[in-house]
Length: 283
Ligand code: G3H
Ligand code: ZN
Image 1: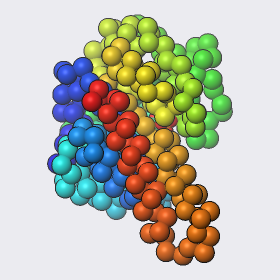
Image 2 (image 1 turned 90 degrees about the horizontal axis):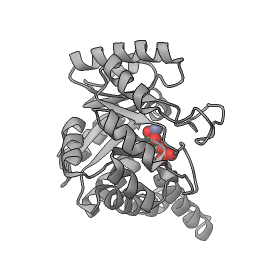
Image 3 (image 1 turned 60 degrees about the vertical axis):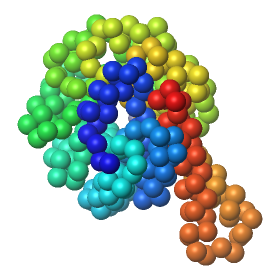
Image 4 (image 1 turned 180 degrees about the vertical axis):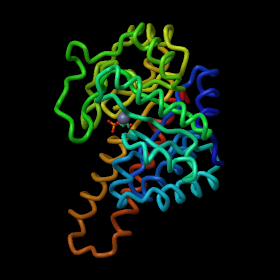
């Protein structure tokens, strides 16, 4: 069934589990996520980033509606989340498109501007029934960003600042920089588990790990045990998906029908989803 992200987060947090959130680019991603979550028997979030919406020509409705239909038909609860929104105009489209939550990403702005813009976004979101996530600290590795090491001094989120930021902005969930970085294709990120514990103790809202594809299984489980709740995963699905496409094209270079290579691609992504959903939810 289609669930609300806030309910799934509250349920996961109360059981000491993580809530996996997977990035949708194409319809096949969404189908893979629904199938993988069913295989694992765990709730999950279908999340669509502003970049993915741009890929669909800036039109959020067709892919969002497809996600909502898949969620409604799924045997486990799935919610819809609009991810890494930088344009306020896109945030305004979220409620009508079926999203129950969004991430407003002002992390590239200087701190004072980040607080002001995020507080406005949170106030708007709450008036329209949306749960709002924001980011403090720079996870790094996002499209078009100058490379930033997750281990660079100052890249980490400070617990006292994080508590102040949540109080000043009124956000419902907080993405924090604890050693992961976006778009990693090797699972070599080293998380600062002690920092996660200190953030979890200082911050009254669920913590969100971005760039989780680069984090090994054991560290993902340890991050959840340390207090991380929402775990965002994108690149890992694309690795599985594209590897399967490559394998098919190599063995069948004359292929024309996309279903020939999209079928194994979707199945490969679904297996990755099922595995990571089990790791994150402690199953
Ligand atoms: O918001 C999305 C995530 O942070 C995904 O990051 O593609 O590195 O797993 P990833
Ligand atoms: Zn992210």
